[in-house]
Length: 386
Ligand SMILES: *Cc1c(COP(=O)(O)O)cnc(C)c1O
Image (cartoon, rainbow, N blue to C red; front, top):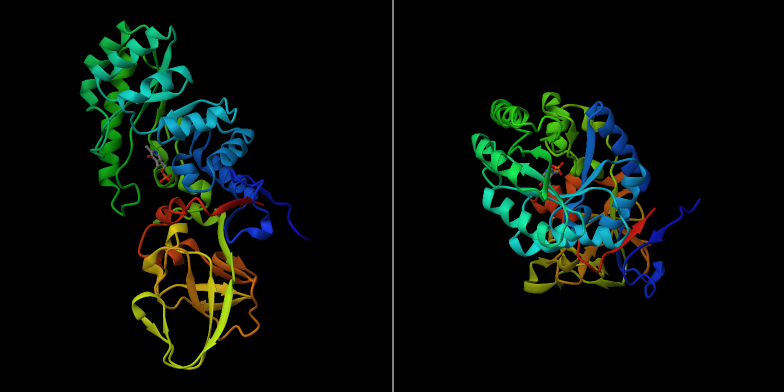
């Protein structure tokens, strides 16, 4: 039975499913399944779903709607642009910009009721002034640097900060959070040290009257590996999409892959032995071969590092990528999959029957992280929700 598909690409009115040259299929049921697995692991803690980078390439609006309807408590984004996109799509759930904001983002953040992380007293004062100007109260969180060394204040600096915050009447502190630098490290010592430092800040906040705020530290892997770091909210991103690189807890094995990347055959030709293929002639056919060209390239996120390395699935047969991946095109040796025809579906990532090119395999070939593959899918890639 053919599954119902919807397409929410901005120009979906212009493009029909048959006209897609390259598309990402997002399996909604798998996202729901993964959320249930996360909920179970979180054992009662609230869930902030991290949807930065367009939900890691899966489409932030679609994923936000799905996750909010499944009861996710809060959404996390990367910047005010991503937050506004969700607000303009009518999403009313709390939204936190999980990193930091630049001063110019303050007016929009206040106006649209988006939570920002604060890292310094002067930043709090500026945001308070903006909120006062708009006659609003801005919900804010405090980021603590416990060892990531990227954003946030040192735990003991929370003392003067929170004293000053009491005087800033247009700010309301709703949370305290930190981020682990390497939750999947085999040796948990550093993560545990980060955790101790966070406890110091939590205790400072409690003593200064902020005892009932949201406390969160765990991204996907910490959530699975460090139950003691769940506090009252967890902050998964990649696990929602069925991935947990480096996980050995066993929980991640219960996650389901969400994303497939597909294209179709555009052109087929039979070439003799010794024929160069692609830019720079990095590949020559070693025998008479059938070469198929697909309309996908590095502009779509199919990286150049996959050249002469990756395989794709065509009619259930694994066929090697030959020659350099170019901006818009990919060449594949389909000699072993004889019945290939123009228009046939090609799986770059995902499965068909018992054959699968997993995200781990693809990112291994590309020598990058799975995050980079899904975030790297270009804007020409239609997102199709099944
Ligand atoms: C990206 C991010 C997360 C989610 O991390 P995953 O490894 O994808 O689960 C959580 N917190 C912060 C601050 C992040 O930047």
